[in-house]
Length: 386
View (cartoon, rainbow, N blue to C red):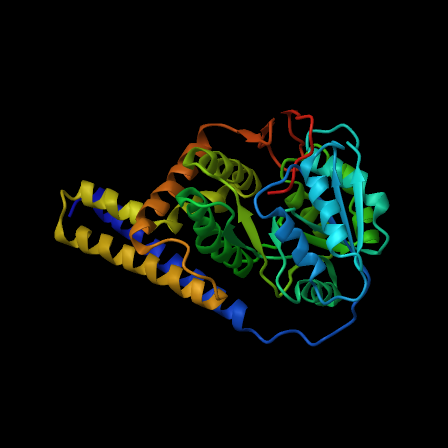
């Protein structure tokens, strides 16, 4: 056995352990006891819009269907002709009993047009608890109650949520993207929590209005690419905790081509790399299948390397199916495509080290150090969160 082949084999084994640890953490999170019913304070949910994306009306309607007594939904876009606003107005007609406010205002200048959109929407929010939720979030039953319960925990300044991926269009690219979120991001986020991280995850950010003001307000995020992470760090700097709410919404994956998916995931990757360089580098261990393929090449197809490849495939397929069952989701990717998903993920990771430039809804941004701002060529329209 060559030294290089042996090292590659050990990296793959580390990937097995990472996969199984992530699976165990998902099961523990899903099956923990639900929190006791608590206060149900009035909540304003802010939904930044940009276009009529796949399943947008269904995602927005999931908020209107919440069994929550005092809920305001604020939908906003920079351009008054944005088709997302038409969807929001149609929603208001569908749910006349709900308090739905529609805002059209470009907001202040800044690199992050999603944050500018939120700043323009904020004056319309009537309640003291704010939930900033991406337009593509599908809220499960009890979503707002879980968020309220997390915020009630002593010392909490911000509540956030995990999320799964949901294909928004037919085709393999959207299913690839959904698998990457559900089987990759979600267990990895829980593993980060287990290791002491308190990341604010951008699909849902909930906090009292006074905490937002003490953290510098939304204006402090105008030139940040990773606005969610920077807000979480600002809240933590106040001595307050960033907690996971006991709920898991889904987010729409709208990509129709692998190229579009690659660009989207590259933006995520470069953003994550700027947030936690060492942890991001270690995340390469999360994909054992490509490492076993390299071990096969380095060992000239030695029997042990072929066995390791089959074992890696089996472990990854088992974990994916077990996570789907735990979350009560239909399988999104057949087992024979799981090796390709791992190779795709590792390719995104490696390419992320070739630069800091990211493309985001017509804007070109630089994934610099959080807190240092970003440079951009800003688009004319607002940007939703994902």
